[in-house]
Length: 205
View 1: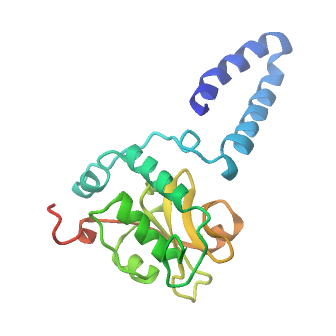
View 2: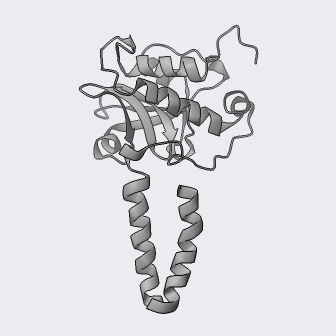
């Protein structure tokens, strides 16, 4: 639907300017973009189509191992996350009967990227993965949060693309959130990427 909208929108704007005047052209465009922002990309309408994007895969050897095709990985992550949505939060848990944030990340990665092995805690996950700029984040990268600059990392989620990420939080359990939300903007600390160092020892490189 998003792709169809992007194809039709310029034609609508161009046609409408012929009979309502050029000065209204920008107003029509702004109104259309606003509709997309509030409807297509809302958290409630999250789906494969709404998260579709053109991804450029890095040419380094790590990317070739972990991200041979980003879009199938993205689809797998969203499908797996949807299967976990609504799972209650339980400190120390790692199952659909209850999970904490790092337990959820581990279980999702076991399904989406079985060649990867990470430590149990969010703090250790951060220490053993490669920090990257947030603007370079791809589906499958990790996002870390902390409540204060003086406090250690206390939360981790899995990036899904276009600002969305999946995580397990108290009171809500497993949910999908967006980095533009005020709380996450305030507490976001770093994005990291899984590398070959995180492969299981019996997996050939």
